[in-house]
Length: 363
Image (cartoon, rainbow, N blue to C red; front, side, top):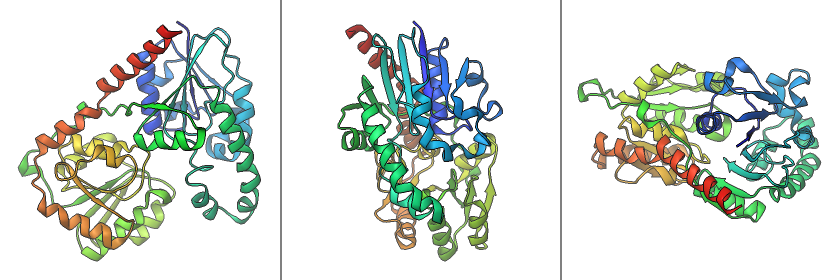
């Protein structure tokens, strides 16, 4: 079977790229198509595949400014020649599903979320843009929404990474979907011995505005509790300036360092709304509880009273109250880790294979 995987851009290793790695493991013969490809920023497993970029890759400074070329990406996708492929899997969060598939091919879209910058977070992105971008965004995003809805009809089956995203797919595309959570390598994490546990809380992940890391830092400044922040991103300098004496900002760190902090922290603090959110699952796989905003994918992975607590609004006061509420929860690292394993790689492989094989058999 000839397989094509379409991914929006390969410029780093975040949650979407972890899904691509798993799909590469499922289909080692697959070719990968993408808008922008920076080889040194992706894993060896992905680099082992034949990777074909669209013309976006050859535009000036595409490796850094790829999002500025968003209006050209629908055109770029429709130029891809996918004749001869039997199975096409698009990985959607940026534009990827809008390819023109051969009539005999099966097109499955694994949707991390409909493009958040034109749908559910459009006003956040526009308000944070510069003056020229704010003027240009309304007509450009109107065109992109029209194309995005039209291209949804080119998909034979949507797979959503969470029930939250399934609701968005229904809202924006009017399409049904099945929910298959993304593969978290829960086996890569371990539980620390009681003597190795520390008193600090942890916040990990990319430091960008919609994840609201500033709220967590302000809350821990006020509570005068220790917080360690791991992650890079556009807000790194701002978070460093905001950090008080009890907040340590480490920036980006190797995976081994992150694993150690997951295992030793008192709890993970997760102040943003994510489509799924692998970070809370990784913390729980390390036996540690999570304090999370009670919206988005975290509501499907964090179990109240077993593996963490929620706060109902994104505010300093709500975060502080939820952190204090952990004192009322009996923390059992073994039970928390067992809960996390239901979101592991094996479950992803089993469910994706069953879904795709069923669709292929039906055809």
